[in-house]
Image (cartoon, rainbow, N blue to C red; front, side):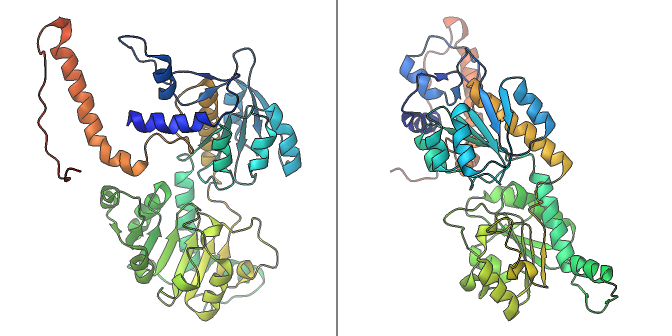
Length: 417
């Protein structure tokens, strides 16, 4: 695991052309028996710190909760400049050591090139990082951190809210009554109890949606090629293949990141494999759905309804056929928009950025991960065992007497290579 960390860190740091203004510091104050060689010590630590001679400057490019701003001000000079154009951002970034954005600001390659090597940390106040050019960040030796936990519950709750509102035609019926109509027979809905929900993406948000859907009496299946089976079993959910999930589902809830693999993963071909009358919820990323194909599926009756919080282009065009469709419920990217989540995200990202600038271990780093989550799950019991054996060994050899050597016998289910 240490080798994996060292490789990731070395790859990130080796791309930095000028390290003269940066220093490397230990993330954890652990006792050591003897000093480590300089080269080894550098490989073990991950994050860049600002010069000690002056406070670093953090640009907050989108609104952030007051608690997060206060945390930043305790350590850095904070520049809150919102609604910057791309040119304005490129001009301002050369004066900043870190930048914090939400989903509305694109941190492009041009931003990193314009920083003149000063930008050290990009903080994404939220989970998705598709608005940050990760390749450019890594090439310029810039660490990218996000806030993956604080808005989990808010996003899951919004997904369930859209699921129920869609099933019972809440938005359409509300608009009808406000227009002076009383159309009870037109807005007969469908029940959630006993229906099959396919959760596409079984991470933090997806698993929380699954828990809540089971509480509503739904049968829940999930697809996620990276989710550990034990996590799904703990929730009482069966992991199935992508095609199995979309073919069996009465409702589909999307919770996957936007990557080259998932871009437009719901398209004409995949819609054709679904049950006629399927209903779709998306509180993940707009780009995972081919929006033109969704309109065609709605018009053909393959998709009965859709409830969308995110879109390929935000805000979507006013004449969008998808937004204007009578069987589509829409909200303006409200997944993380609760007072509690906004405050939590602000604190989480502020702590991550300040920690990174101080040189602390970046547990939420995106472009220099410690160990992949799926690997860490498999390694966890062995890591715990090794830690316990280490504590035992220290006690056995304490004082220079006792055990002189140890023979380890082990077996593995994996065939030797």
